Length: 114
Image (cartoon, rainbow, N blue to C red):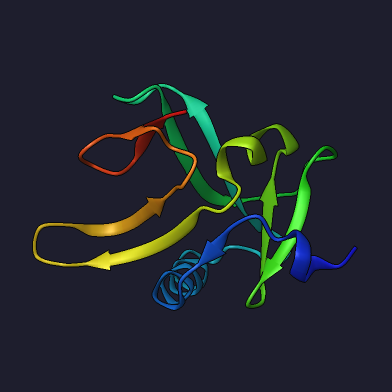
């Protein structure tokens, strides 16, 4: 597999710094990957999932800047081309998702419709 051509998402440098900080502060095992996905719900129809997890049999696995990224194949339809950012502003602090596949997003940036 040529991981460079098949990585479906991007993670900004500031988001990578925060993910590595979280991994270290919470003592997350190095064999766990960052699970990125979607689930039904949220104010726009789908909400994003983001968290460290162990690899499941059906997962696709990618590596971005030393972080193993896990994704269920069915979720890639909604996530291809998405960028995960870290916002550190006065009004908004946390992970943000910039998704070109979203037809509508909510004000919080945590859910979308496809």
